[in-house]
Image: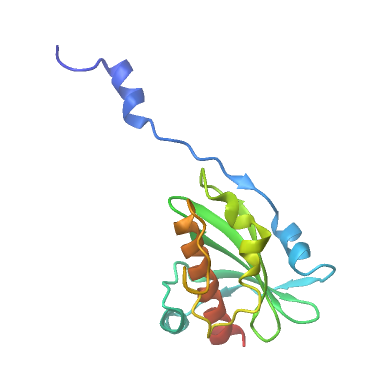
Length: 172
């Protein structure tokens, strides 16, 4: 026998476990959850090479994209939309910053991994409130790990650290 017939082998060759995205909040919903009653003015930016390097140096985290979706919040503060990779898939999250650049709140908008959804738990997200770029934001140091979601926890912490550095380099 010369191998599997093509009609049997082809489906086996392309089979991959599917992940399903769970959308929890739209951008507009996240804005109102983080800054209830506020209005938002788009302030999207494209980072220069120098800004990217400065953010990477300050945060210790690579800047994946030059484009950053940011809104100025009425009454002060910033709303930043970002994505990080969990284990295999992107996690879309929003970070609200106070006028002084400290974390106001974090919300998970879309989670695409098959497990690890616990990063949406209020207690886990609460640990970021008040953090600034001077905080370590390191897993098992000042960020609690969630068993089964280690990479999601680490990458969200890294993303927050990067956005805090972005605030200091670009928005302050």
